Each structure stands twice: as C-alpha cells, then as structure tokens.
Image (cartoon, rainbow, N blue to C red; front, side):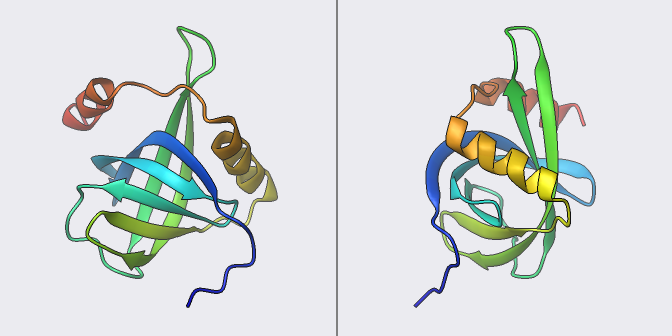
Length: 120
C-alpha cells in the first residue's frame, strides 16, 4: 500500500529523459504532482535510486520552444515505465512543474523528440 502526501494529477506530456547529461529516450508523464512523476517509457535498464534528468519541452508560441529540466531519482519501476521523485530544493521549480501538469501544454511531436535524441 502506498502512502502519498498529495494527490496525483493525470496528464500526458512528452519529455526527454537524460542519463549522465545525455538524452537517452523519450517518455510521457502520465501523472504527477510537485514531488514526483510516473513516466511511461521504453527506456530499459532503469533501477531504483538511479538519477535521471527529465526535460519538458513546451511550446509557448508556435515558434518558441521553452525547456524545463528537472533532476530526479527513480523510486520504482514496472514493465511500462517508472516513478521518480523530483530532486529539487527550489519551490519555484516545483511550482513550474505543477503548473505544467495541470495545464497539459502542447509539446513537440514524437518525431521531433527522436531527432533531438539522435542529434545529441
């Protein structure tokens, strides 16, 4: 049985997943709150306590792509994805993350994200 301090909010935001500063996969935030996220991804070899960076790319206008990067620690995994705890001491960063989850912003298409991973 899980004990959460706050509710999870469903969403569907495409993201880039970084390992050691290098983009390694794309994923989707399926639900989350200001402290943690559940991410669906095909990324293999993910283990509890592993550090990953999560980058959310959001279109603020048709031509302007805004990037938000968060450090995280994997807390659990399953066959569809993994849960992470956001490793941030900044209340502002946590507020930005929560606003994005609730707003469900427009994000780049999967092909654009694949191109970003391939060009890294």
